[in-house]
Length: 429
Image 1 (spheres, one colour):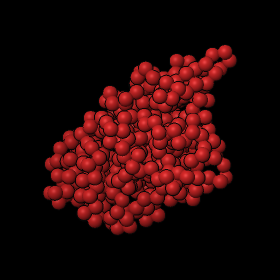
Image 2 (cartoon, rainbow, N blue to C red; image 1 turned 90 degrees about the vertical axis):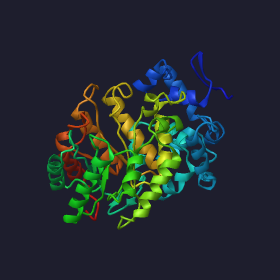
Image 3 (cartoon, one colour; image 1 turned 60 degrees about the vertical axis):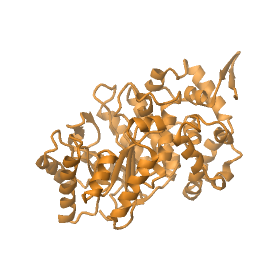
Image 4 (tube, one colour; image 1 turned 180 degrees about the horizontal axis):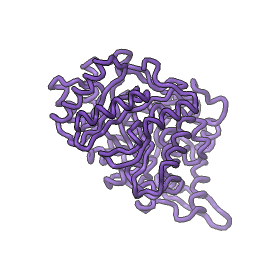
């Protein structure tokens, strides 16, 4: 086993594995403290970051953070890696990769060509060495464009998921939120409902209602009811009008098993969705949600820091050519991201890492009411992500989800972002 080390003054800090080095190098967050893997001091964190900067990128192809034989996500990451795409940066270490990403040579074309040459662990590592402005600058150069009934992710565009949740799934209440959001120009990413009662009959009723709205008013968008993928498979068999196929995913096999999913199940759902041929300008139809802390909350992180586990989930996402992916960044709570400082950094990390890997990233810019954060903090993250080129955000009446009981971005927040930054919805919309 390789020992990684760095000396600060007369003290030498030693790290017994790549997983431990990554965890100790991670900017402070409560989830890693809860897991007992965070750096004990700021000095140890800096020592770990300095040691990490010197690690060759090839090391990540030799030392798997989670056992190859025991974890299908690790095997997927290995299978996805394109050595030809990796070749231009194969001689670099993590610190040199950071410098190259910030250079003018790393333009949109170069970053697009590099996507399959990067592993999630490489991308997570380099993000730990970057300031917020670095995360924004590099992400801005990345473009991941997707298509179903409209086109999301083009330069100069900011799309929204119109989220008309209702505590009793009342159709009239949902319709009121839909009209409100559409009048603000929200909903081009999707009209997406989290059902309060997650069963097949309820979801079917909501799908038919959304489909009727889209067809009657000829809205160039797509619908999604965020139910478990096994429910969606049943609904497809029943002939329900399924546009996007949704599932929450994580970065380890054990965490995905806690969600009741596997790669084979996702593959089955993807193929079932494709068989419907409901897209008009494209047929990218998977919608995935992720979030830092999900693997830890399931006791399925294998000693790997929560941000690296999160980035591993993007390997799962890109395997199925998704239309939308978003990090629900502050939703899991302060046990994982304690305050606005941690939430803001995590949101920018997630967007940067996903875009580098070729994932069409959006963000639910949000917090729970027991976190040390408020709506001003969400304004700051919204503005930062808008400048970073985020594909889409959420749009909810008054920023307050009355079903899920958390705070996010509103219809007028999207209007603010578009006006201030000169952004527009999807062109078809």
